[in-house]
Length: 111
Image 1: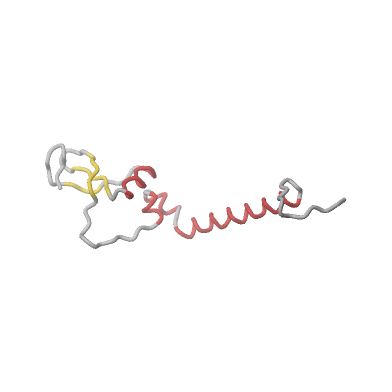
Image 2: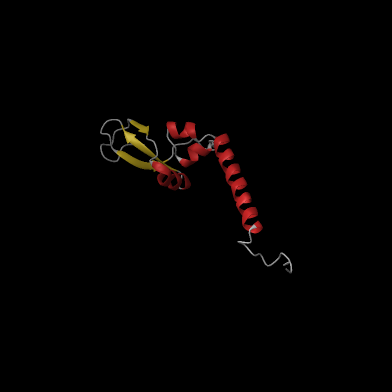
């Protein structure tokens, strides 16, 4: 692979910029590269040996940098999703208890 601007072979992988670029490039199996000679940043097919599959963590898939990667580890994400599920369950219970929701499947009590 060579730089499209200066045709140098001195290339290295560049980091993906943000979530949008990370997701879109991964779906297309593309990666950003930077030329060490001229500094040009470009997108090219990801260089992988045939048959080699790299396992991706959640942070890799989201394209997070080192600081965000430390803050968004797997257990932290699972704990956040669990907390959200518990909060939504409590909100549903309270809204049913106070009559804010009136689901048609529950029988009404005559007063």
